[in-house]
Amino acid sequence: MKIHQKYMLRCIEIAQNGLGSTAPNPMVGAVIVNNGIIIGEGFTSPYGGPHAEVNAIQSVLDTSLLKEATLYVTLEPCSHFGKTPPCADLIIKHKIQSVVIGILDPHDKVAGKGIQKLKDAGCNVTTGVLEQECRKHHKRFLTFHKKKRPYIILKWAETLDGFIAPEKEKRNDKLQPYWITSPNSLQMVHQWRAEEQTILVGTNTVLEDNPKLDVRHWEGESPSRIVLDRNLKIRGDYHVLDGSIPTVILTEVTDTSKHLEGITYKLIDFKKDIGLQIATTLWEENFNSVLIEGGSKTLQTFIDAGLWDEARVFTGNTNFKKGIKAPEFSGKLISSRKIERDHLKIYRND
Image (cartoon, rainbow, N blue to C red; front, side, top):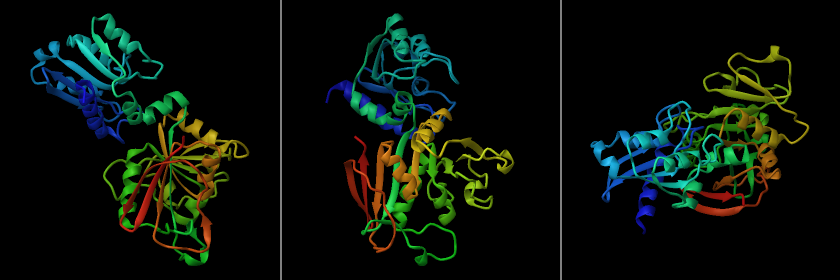
């Protein structure tokens, strides 16, 4: 393995530590090398905090070594003032002579300006190292800025005979999810929730299951809840309206007297292009990823519109014979694994 690729892999590895906390900023990883020895590492702090390059530089014990060091970073250093000063300026200040970059930043405030600033200061800049791997790593950030929508992940669990929920007669009177999969699979779903900015469900899912949509079975922050409620059918005593987690209701009801305090309401036209309107609304709200957990109609809406990037499908070891059918879709299978008695397949929309 070439030396640049070796250190860029390390950048990607440590950058994963920011998953679920840096958004809408990208989760960047940075490594500083002097004479073949790593002297500093850093990844992006939670949103509003220092970027990866800053953390890496601050981790170096002997800053005199920076003048003869190479900085590796998964994404082009920023060149503008945001919540923090430009990383490119800090690199120049410490006279780091070589910078190796995975991919360019598509953000219109950067987009090559960071690289140009470094070059103008006499820095030797190398780009495109492990470019495909870095693109995959920064998939949420790239989708948000290039496609003007969040990275969309579909998730559901289905039975061996292709149902995602049983007929009503099989359910008890208590409003709660009907679990098809094992506790380990449930814990994995809560981990996924902690990794994304938002989670979205439709009205029927709330009325039938009364889900909390939190991460109580995993460490981390619960994602913002996005709920489709065309006619505001969901009462205030349902979990999604308890105000414990930031919640956005997408509706067509304009009467603000029906709005609950502490809940955000956004208007969309349910008569046309619902999927595109939802994606655009989330982009406008600065959400760069969404985990869509159902129900079947909501999932199918995004599938039919071609508005999805990943589908994560559990198959539980049971049959319903009757009930609500699982969504129909086609995608490229990218992984398959067993989790206890369940089978998890992950697809990509190519």
